Length: 160
Image (cartoon, rainbow, N blue to C red; front, side, top):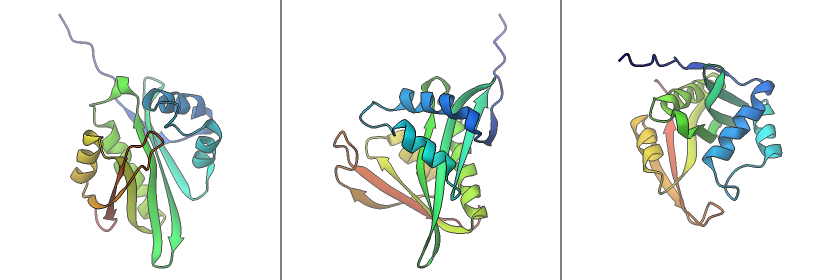
């Protein structure tokens, strides 16, 4: 019996027509108390100081990442607002590639540093960030609506 050929993942920048599929991933990944509301998510994707990368398989969004940057006293700093992969498409390296592309967009915006919050219980995400050179930089008590704590991870954006 032949195994079905797995479709390749196409990565590209977000288009406004992607919003409904993008938000469906938000709904699949987060409980209603934890997800961004539609209006805020739309604002994030439309900001001039951000980039939203998507992963697509056979015309269906499989995941996305939103990174934004801001000028601080010591230069431009980037923040990963969210990185999400539809549960159906996990364990294929999609989050790793989306994270790499977000970092590259931040570099192109001249950011020298990138950081994020991650639920302290999300071991898979923490392992991904550590594998990309992110280091633990703090803890935020009761950061999420469900009372979970967040860990803060960051890395410099020099080199690869």
